[in-house]
Every structure is written in structure tokens, then in C-alpha cells.
Image (cartoon, rainbow, N blue to C red; front, top):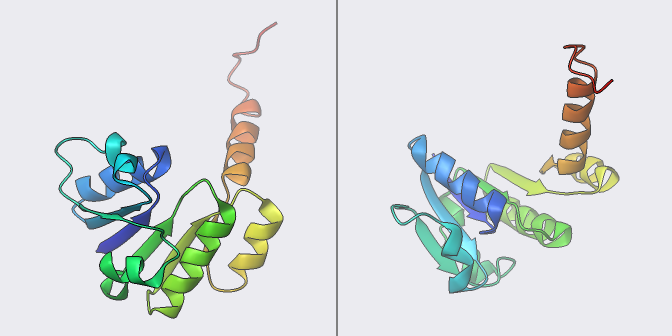
Length: 138
């Protein structure tokens, strides 16, 4: 699978590395060359520098032939813009990291794949807190 990861922060870097480890072809888009500093030396994926909501940057990253795009920057609006643009360019799966649960639900209805860290953390916290494993502090 060919995947374009937009955002070279902690999430984008770890996602790109894991995708590559699983045998996928990965391109990472970052705003500056410095953004790629977290990628390990042995990372074989492509790196594209530029503003990710710019169609030309996404074309350079190969979005039109990608199987999926994961927009995982710190900016909800940018992630949504990139995912919507990727869908318009023909990408079958476009994931957008969106912190606000209400916004995530809205864009999920528009065909995006919203990933909401807020809901994921709350769900995991509830699971851990209700596990009843006897590891309480009292």
C-alpha cells in the first residue's frame, strides 16, 4: 500500500516508521526540512517539503496514486483541509486527526476518516480505570 503521511511530528513519524516496517511505501510531508529530524536514519520513505494543503505539494508527494493519506499534524483545520483535498484528488482513504469530538463526528459524515485523540484517550482511560485489576492506590 502507498501511504502519504502529512505531518512529521511524533505521531506522523511513528506512523510512517510503523507503516514502512509493515512493508508499505511511505511518503512523509513536512513544512520544513527540519521537520524530518525525528525520522530514523534508516527510514527509506520519501520526504516532501512544503505546505501540505497546497495541491502541488500533495501532487509531488504522489497523493494521486496513493492508497491512503493520513493527515496527522497538530492543526485540526489543516488536517481536514488536506484530507478533503486528498479525497478530491482521488485518494480512496483520507484520515484526519481531529482533537474536537464534535468536529470529528461532523467530518466523519462527509466521508473523511476522523481520528480523535480525545475520544481515544477517554476510551482507554475508562477501560483502564474499570479494569478491576486490584491495582488501586488505597
